[in-house]
Amino acid sequence: MAKKKRTTRRYTDEFKREAIRLLENRGDTTAAEIASSLGIAPSILYQWRKQLGSAPERLIDNVSLEEESRRQKQEIARLRRENQTLKKSIALFAKDLDL
Image 1 (cartoon, one colour):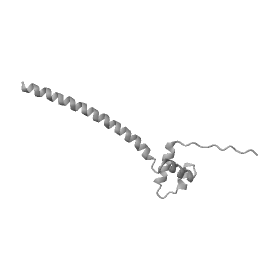
Image 2 (cartoon, rainbow, N blue to C red):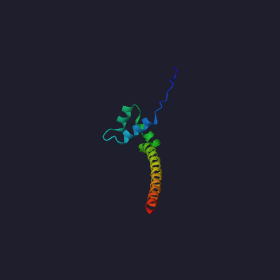
Image 3 (cartoon, rainbow, N blue to C red):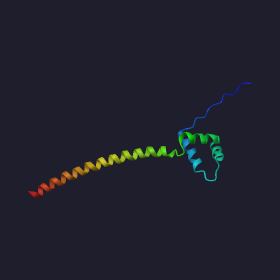
């Protein structure tokens, strides 16, 4: 009798993060019930949580924090340029008033 070759399923990081989120916010639901609904073993859920950390949404937040930081730096640079323009305008108007 020939042995069946076992195929390994590949799951996306997004799927893993969502599964961990479900595990952490499960309420009265057991880990076994969550795993069963996802078609995986409960031990895999715990393994993913150990690999990715207990709060995988922080990884997503870090990306948005970096994006927000970049956006704010651009906004600060724009406001500084506007401020310099206004200072120059005020100096020109003040010079005209003195004449």
